[in-house]
Length: 362
Image 1 (tube, rainbow, N blue to C red):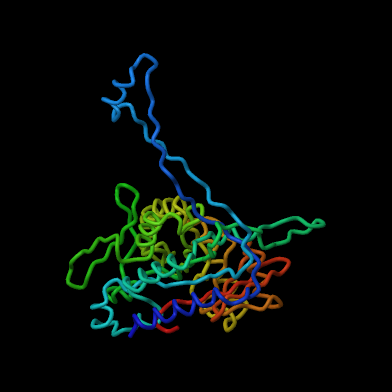
Image 2 (cartoon, rainbow, N blue to C red):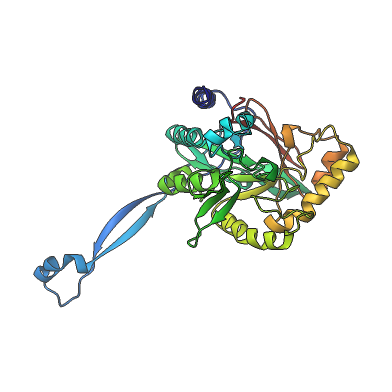
């Protein structure tokens, strides 16, 4: 049933590409292809026969990168999002979670099938930060959609991943426990099952799976772009208990630092998803200000500054709401909510865009 649902969603999303643009003139950019040229290098005093006999030793392989033709993209800017993956379906559906993850999450198999379909239909990952710029107009700082270029036939895709907190109360629900890294800088996951068995894998969460997919299909990513990790902070990040109430906070911070550095170096970006994943519209101004302050003091020092704010529960604030001004003052420029269609609106001081969730609910 789930496989049919996710397949149905992808078909709908692909079908959207045939519709007119839904308020977006922004233009991302994409990948490179390469052709291999074999060049033979010979000494002036070497005879042709000697060259032939020792062709292997005298042949240098050079890779000439051929840049694809870039054209201005004037269609819809797509932004889809996922949550953490269901890494262990038997646990998720039969254990104490009793299928609770099914609403927000997809399985590893479903995520891989999504990537295959997106790639087949000429989508290409772009960095959300490449879709806008801040310019000075008449002494005022203005946020504008950026004129970006794509290889012919490619459609831009922003991908974001929400939370990745790995709540300790949900251990043994079928998710992984945390993101780790091997000695070569490749991402893996660590999970301790209820049985006591420890599972280390590079094939059961978005980060390592997407990294491997882009390595296999480099033209699925423009300039090495991966996805944006929209993080909360109330119980740490990426499975590390970096929150103020953690008894091992400092050691957890030191443990996650190289993970963050490697993510940033390999095309991953970060966004604020609120500190406590609160309802933006329902909480008071004071609670909202406190929540944002906690993210800025606890999470930003770890992941670095970001201009991207991803509304928890997709609850967008009106630009007239005083809470919205708090976010502007903290440097946020792109605000992402949830809607069933792509939509983008450029305000003078910010950009509003919608995201479409791919999960067990939609």
